[in-house]
Amino acid sequence: MMASIAGYTVTHINTITTIFTPEPTCFTPSNLWLQTTGCSTYYPPFPTGKPTDTWIQSLDCPYTVLGPRQNGDARDASCYQYNAFTAPGTVYSDCPQSMTAAASDTTTFGNGIKLVQTTCCPAGAYQFYAPSGKPDTSTTVIKGRTWSMVMNTDSLCKASSVPQLEGKNLTITKSTSPTVATTTAAWDGGALFATPHYIQKFLYEGPSTTSTCFGGACADSINPLVSTPTPTSAPTDSYVPPPVHPVTQFTPAPSCLSKSNLWLVSSRCHLVEPKDVMTRSLPWLRCTIPRAGDPDTGYNTECYQGVSQHTDRTVGPDSTTTFYSACPVGYTAAHSSIHYPYDEGMLDEYGPTKIYDATHKAVVCCPTQYPFEYNDGDAWESTTVHDDKTHTVQFHRMPNCRATNVWGLANRDVVMTLTGEDDMMLPDRGALPRRVGGNQFVLNQQAPSPTEPPRLTTTRWDVVEKTLWAQAQYYSYVVFHETYTCYENCDQYFTYSYHNTDPNHTPTGPPRTVRT
Image 1 (tube, rainbow, N blue to C red):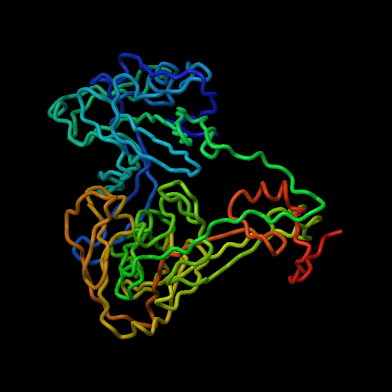
Image 2: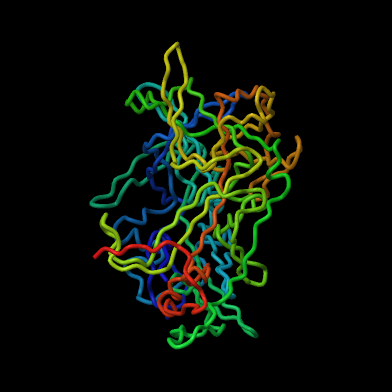
């Protein structure tokens, strides 16, 4: 297995377990560096109860870091694990010297395998916290105008308050190669950042013991303590029934599909014209989409299947894997696609040179409480009128379920919860409120405590003009010879047992053609 740790792809053999020791000067309080990161213009969603545009515009914004760049010269790189001097086969079992554990996350892979990943941040003079997954805000001046920005610092350790630096003039390093370059500036009272280190510990649970493996070369699918039969070819002179996969159907909580569970989401958008990037998203532009169902699709396990890892399966407390074989309760298939994953010679328009009776089917499911249809494509265009001129607006990251002509809401005063598409990713937003029925709300426990109550708006639903959106749910499988539905290890079955066909089955599908 290969894994990316602290910016490096690790393929070392797990032979030397140790604790990393950075150079003594790497994280001393005075070793401050100036770096830049991608940032975006930003308008807070619904600052006064009205929707305000959130537009992403690529720029570079400066921020201050404790410790040098990872991609600097060899001396700078020696501050970080898995650098150019790391002996082959080295793995790390605990946070580096001068760093401390700031967070720990556990991932269950099934088959008795768990990954415990520890996030390490510098210890000492500054109080760093683990990466929050939320970008930070700042301001910048472009063409004489001050813009609010969000910076892509969500993967860094952060010290929000640094009283030790208040009122001080600081010498900050910009680079050390080919020569040392520094700048002197008064501390601006902002946050201080640092690059985290990660410790990966895999736990393999057996019938009576547990094994541990550190680093990115550990297997996440094969448990050495659980006997796994070596794949063998099915016999050629008799039929062997294929394995049976445990399947289930996901059932959302009743409140998830309530017809009153409606949201007005401030979405990413821009004007298709003009092309000048700094005028494509002016402050008057209002970009919102009405959504049915909680827009917090990344964490709400009550409403969405498989949000933590896979969308096609669930892993129980006993590590038993069960596969989703149908749309969730309250959903229906809105779109399906098939392809033939094992056919040969599919690289041109004339078709395959060799075909196999193995069909992969993927299904997109949409809620049934409104007349949703499949929406193909990430972007969507609409129009808006400003100063008597009609503009074309393009929205981004649109859901896969879309409903037009929603007569069930026609001419009704509809109550919707206001939220921003990126609210869960923005600083100081607090928890995203989730409707549980009527006007009652609970809070997503993945987020911090809320800083404000849910914000509601009432709008008259124009059945001709308005479009309603919703998050799709998905499942897929491979069917061999019209008789065996495969949910996992399908490539292995194809390799070893494709010839295993039921002699009593008569094919019903139309014959496929082969290019000669």
